[in-house]
Every structure is written in structure tokens, then in C-alpha cells.
Amino acid sequence: MRDRPLPIDDQAAGFEVTDDFEPFDQKDDVFRRSWHDPDVRTEAAMRFYRTYREALRDWRSADGFRQQDYALRNAAWHVSDLFTEAREADDRREGFSDAFTQNRDPAPERVGIGTPAQAAAEVKRVARLFGAADAGICAVDRRWLYTRKFSDMSGTSRENDIDHGLTNVIVTVQPMNRALLDTVPSALSGTATGLGYSHDALVVLALAQYIRNLGFRAVASMNDSSLAIPMAIQAGLGEYGRHGLLITPGHGPRIRLGKVFTDMPLAHDAPIRFGVREFCEQCRRCSTACPVKAIPAGGPDTARHNRSNIAGVRKWSVDGERCFGYWTKQNTDCAICVRVCPFNRDFSRPGARVWRWLVRHGVRRWPALTGWLVKLDDRLGHGRRRKPADWWRSSSRDDSF
Image (cartoon, rainbow, N blue to C red; front, top):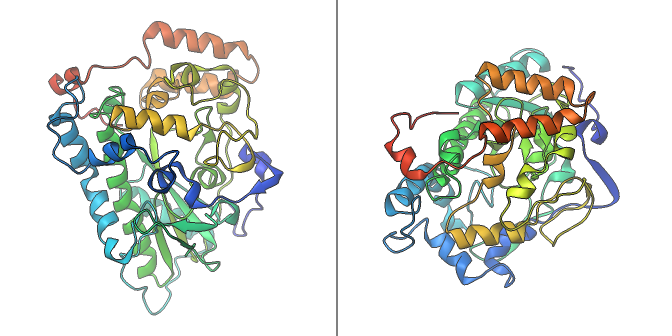
């Protein structure tokens, strides 16, 4: 790491920003559109949201969609929901439409903790203490900040409140429970998503308060204020996958991302490459498995499926309208693409680490290796759906990350 900020290098980050690039308005996010755009705001979408709040006696009787499954899913979301709903009276839904404001004031005097490199190492250590699996740091690239914020409740837009004085961003990785995600599609699998966000809220709020206690400014953020994945890539946490998700070396795509914007002087990390781009160019597990064909089967491009795609970035982009439409039909979020992704492995196991080594060091030299690895996955049954009832009966429900 260096004491001076690294220049932004899109090529190193694995995506290309073209001349027709346009920053993204939060109003065009497919979830925000589900509250104001007739093309997305359907009765199915409203029913989908109600399943997170109402009594769940009559939704579905299929395995994985019983009241017990919804009860667990919604309980996993509860901590995140408490923070999100705390300031609804002020027209703020923090963590999803707005950054968090639930912090104590910064200390009146700043306390340094060494050079920017030493401070970065300490901040990452604290992030892991609070529960993050990993953390990276980069300069705030304002191309990824939303041009304007949007309120689901009032239907109004307002200025983005991440000011120019917050020049650094700490991006945190929160893994999701693999055993639960194996039951996708099911309401039970949504428990992994809710747990991810509830844990993420704790991590970013506590990390921001630690920095504020040292006298610096810090703003905690989850799915609000900016696009998270390009910042995570610039912070050295992973690469874009075909399914439009971040793929990390430690947990594949099975993660949630958090952010803390700060003016604390911190050394920056650099983007990493470990074979994801080359592997995904040949592997089509996710695009084949997607029931609504929302994931592209071709190469990275600048095509926009609809207004929920950012303009002017060459990458793999998912059709958010099709994807969210399937969620609403299922009455829960879907992560089939995560379940079937070959990078969705338990990398604490030696065999998974060997597989990752082959991807990192072999795919670029021998492109045909990708096909062999995918076929091996198929034979081993990797990514196969687990019956939700089997999860409930299992003695190893806490198979963690």
C-alpha cells in the first residue's frame, strides 16, 4: 500500500467506462422503481413487500414457503429493519435509501493512529473484529455516487448527502450462510440475505463510530448513496462476475457489501485479478440456470436492458426488471445465480482452495480448463438445490459461511 491515493485505473479494475457514461440516479434502481414506476410497481411487487411485514398464513404451502420459513426469514431481517425504519418520520429509510445517521458526534479533537498505511491496517482489523470477513479501502470515485437520492415513502428526490470532504471509502464484506442459500429458491433462503444485512448494519455503524471517536468524520452506508460493487472492486475485494455480482476470493459471490465514507487519511488498496473474468467468459452456469434469462450469455458489453442499468460501462449487466419480476412471483428474493456459481464454495476446505488455485493460475494459460472444471462441478453435484425440509431436519443448520 501507499501513503498517497492511487489513481483510479478502470482497466486494472476490470471494467471499461466509455465516453457515453452517465452517473446513476437512485430513482432508476429497480427496487426504487417498484414504488413509483407502473412498469415495476405491480400488485405482485406490493404482495412481495407485504410478506416481510404481515402475518404469513396464506402465502404458499410449498416446502420452503411455509409460515415457519417466512418467520425465520423475517426474524433475520429484524435488526436491519429496526435501523431502516427508525427515521421514517423524517422521510428517511436508512441503509437502503439513505445513509445512516444514528451515530454519536465525533470527538472534538483528532487522534492519529500512525501513517495512512498503519491507519488502514488498524481500520481493517477493527472491521474484522466487528464481524466483517474482509475490508478494502479506496478513494471515493464520485462516478459511482447516485446523482440524486429517492424516497420510496414520499416519492421525491433530493441531493446526495455524501459530501466532497469524505474522500475515502472503506468497503466491508459480509458473508452469507451457504447452507441456507443452498435452498434457493425458497423463503427460507432469504434468511441468509436478512442475516447478511443485519450483520452488515452492525459492522458499518460500529466501524463508523470508532472512526468518529477518533475525531474524524465517518458515514455508515449499506445499499444507499452509491453503487457498491465498483467501489469494492477498486478497493481490491474481488471481480465482476457474469451474474453482475462481486466475486471475492474468500466467499465467491455469497456476500453483502457495506461502506463507510470518511475523511480519515487512509492508504488505498489496488484492484485484484484472480481469474474470474477469464472463467466467466466461458462458464455460463448462472445464465443457464436463471429461470427468467435475466443474465447475459454473451461477453461484457455496454447494452442497457432498461433504465435500471447504468449507461456507459462495459461489463456483464443483469436485466433487473426480469430478475425482480421473478422475486415477486416467488414472494421472496432469488439467488439461484449465487447457488450455482462455481465460485460459491467453502474455501476453508483444501479441495476448494486447490480449485481456486487452478482458476487463478491455470485458466489464463489453458482456457479449456474452465470447461473441465465446470463439468467436474456438474458431476459432483455442486450448486444442486437442497430441500428446505432437509435443512430444518439437519443437525448442522449452522453450517456457517
